[in-house]
Image 1: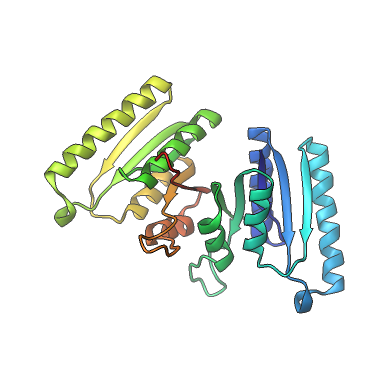
Image 2: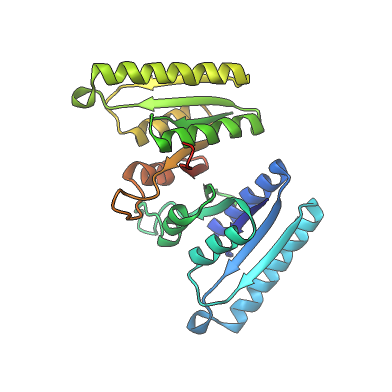
Length: 135
Length: 135
């Protein structure tokens, strides 16, 4: 059994990772950290390097906390939601953790399209968390 | 700390209750079962009686499982989402559990308006589960 978390270096991504880490400890499950981006035009080498460094730090933190884990960086042209749901199915996922953005810069409440797809398409439960002031 | 679950006698409501019960056991938290309906025209005395019986069974099951709990039947003219988010805030909720309907009768994927509101407005994490074949 494993906990699957979609991780991107944003406040919501960090909030999701923090919650997923806590769930992995509580349930004594393996944590699968999925970073997916679509490649192609979205892909910038400097940004990719910075992100790789951040993922490295995430891995060291999980090592130190003694949480069994795996980091999967996927660039296969999929929407993040698609990758996350697929990895959950392949990995016998018991829980997907996602970060929600609470408000747009103009203050409107929205549920992003990736979040909606994951909530609807996941076959396992989905834990949705919001970023706090510390994320 | 407590786990808050919105309960209605549907497949999704039962799936949410089952998941919330498991979370209460895992986290050793109190379970607050919220049933809210708007009263007025939606209110039918026979239906209310049947539902009350079902809530009674839920309470006996929680008693037997040794899970500290509270059942709140609210008829105060609110949308269920509003009641659930408010109860979570009043009860120091650490998690809200909701059931999602995966498909409409014509097979379309949808996320109901109550689910969307809870996901967006809750200040605590929200666990979204789907009904299984046994619910």
